[in-house]
Length: 295
Image (spheres, rainbow, N blue to C red):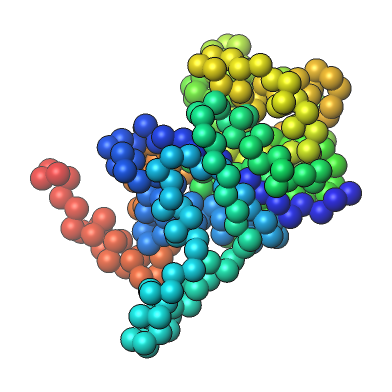
């Protein structure tokens, strides 16, 4: 079994749900406390043992490359000013992993974005981490959880969490067939945004995958659907129809959808409360300084 050391982060979307903030900057670079949201995802991957990351970008995404690049002027200034702690943080950003980039020059869907990474991935299993989703689990990063399940079962994996019954119509829902363990099931279908009474489970697909390179064969054959887009889930369904086993794993961790305004606000508040530099002041403000009647 090939060791999982590669990951793909699709980051070519327009971020329309958080406009106008994303008019001139990528949604992946929106700040959560003191880091762009994309850095949290890269850190999750690195902490999971990923060595090589390819970020699929689009137009107006140059700031992503700049952020993870070496910055001579900044680092030289910090060194001269004796700001060693800040210098260490900045140096770490450009050295945490081997990060490469490929441009998705046409907005043809998530499946098309993943297909752009094929020359980089080659014939190895790889993690997909969607740029909209940050998952907090300091003890067991989500990508690491998926890798451990892959090492145990050897199949492609869809990362899921159980959602409320009233929310199933917002997600792609897994149809499970067989329990492999307490958190893992074999699956034979996705139901896209079903009504409550039609949902086969409450397991929603949420932003993390670990796929074998077999997926590329199906993405290359996939015909564009609605809006001319090639969907990753359609290719996974075709794999299932051909007898390829795909499992769904209910990962542990708190997920933040930073592609919408409330998710971004919630992430800033909760990560702010976890941050040593901001925790006390923020907590005091939320307890005593926030006057809801005057907001």
